[in-house]
Length: 229
Image (cartoon, rainbow, N blue to C red; front, top):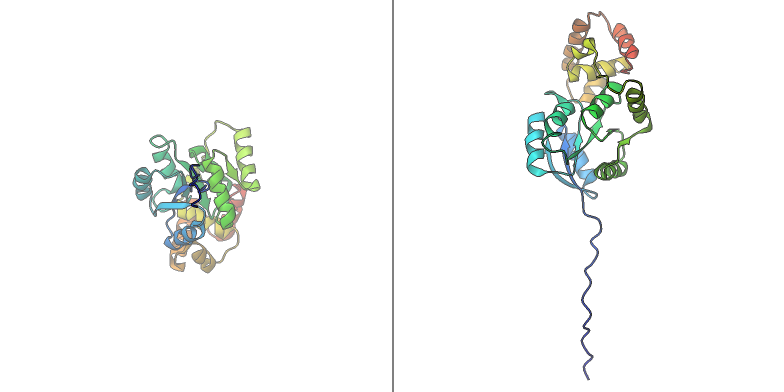
């Protein structure tokens, strides 16, 4: 005798939470490849860009949930991307991912519209958690970086972050200055920023000329006074 067929409907298998769609903006191809590989198990990387113009057009085309955004790029950096996107695509959330932990960079990106700021020393699991929190509407910072933001907005909530002397420098010159002030040798700066030693020397010469200083020790004191170190 055949068993009666069950008339109960088949319940769908729970596929778990939907994977977030993430876009990468960084001018270093090797870094983007590393982030893409590390995040592959956690999110769907839907695109990447190495310049501001690429980022603006491709983010608009792909509509990601979260954009991982480098702060310093040759053509304007993360702030330029944010300023171009925040009005036309307010639903996209931005998380800064940078080698820089300087107060001016953190505050500048948050004023421009980023939902959080983490440094490139973050672990893959921590980065995946930060992305999900930003997608959920939270603000994400390391404790030290959060202190910068709280201090800046509590003390001068409406004041722009501006420094006429600092504004003379390009983003790359600021990066070189910051590492130089921390005691990095030229070859260490070159390795950190993926540029040649000759290029480092050129940037240092430009910084010295623009700030009217004669050596790295003066630069270090100047950077320390502005909390850039």
